[in-house]
Length: 480
Image (cartoon, rainbow, N blue to C red):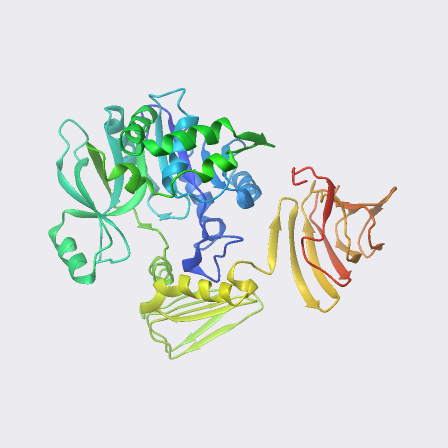
């Protein structure tokens, strides 16, 4: 991968929260879109990491929620990044408090540059993006607050806009002064702005010196400074994560950096970007990025499309064959436990679907059948009154907590790999086709001592089978 040469180290700050409801059912609260391989073999988060590592970049700082900390760690390792600073946000308070905490974390080097970027965007032309970052770095070193805007190719109503002024004197010729931020327009206004050539889409990517953004927060959002400083002072290390102080962070205003600082600050510079960008904010955006054929149809997975136009058909389950006949302007997304069929003109309303499902108590609103854990994953194969059958995968070196259950007993059958099983005072090594019974109330543990993934079938029986029926005594992932 080619990277533009940057004059000195830039600290990437990657925003990795969010619930991703607009791409339901593939993106859900338990495993949102930034961690999903929506556009290829690696996740959007991993693609972001690749863009923001290499010559000229320092150790990445990741801001995410507690429920995603082990997923982020695993995916960092998947792209060969062994070290990152992971800050855990106790709850979502929008980008303003998050970015301020990141800046305060870097405050010992006020002249250092920090590049803030979402983790769930697509950027196809990395070389062009790197060149834009290099141009922005020149302006940032001169004390400018830099934002990046996308050259629009359509009258889009789903994005905010940046209005441009003349080129910035003394900087890279692509750098432009920012006149103002513009809220999401209606269709007529969007068409006018596209025709004028003076507007860019707001990409939510920022570059500035640490000292300059801290001064901007002090000037324009001083009410955030106290809670952010206290969240760092009250924070603590948890394994290799840094947990921001819960009470202090909860006291911060829920506000974006745009509203808190950028729309009030003077001397902002915009770097125009034409780099194959998309925020993948809806299924129609995914269709545009999925190389549709001459009929405007894109497919993924086991799919048959007959006489379809302008449609996206995706099957996310290799055993589920999706067939579309005569579809026009339709998104059809099939998963094992949920199917979405929507008119593309209503693609922005998918998040409303999630709210309705949540109100109905449907588990599909937020969770997948496969639940990821720091040691691997599990998925429910069958569930009824008083019994549940699960498939469990434990990674090499993975170890479940030492635990017991109040309401259920369990049977384990090893399918592939090897397992070290503790039940009370007994420790056994088990291999394929061997089984063991875990009595109600027994203190037990499962771990994978081998070099291959461990797969087993677990049969639970009892009057209550909820995940909260766990008493943990020891846990290498600090979940006790």
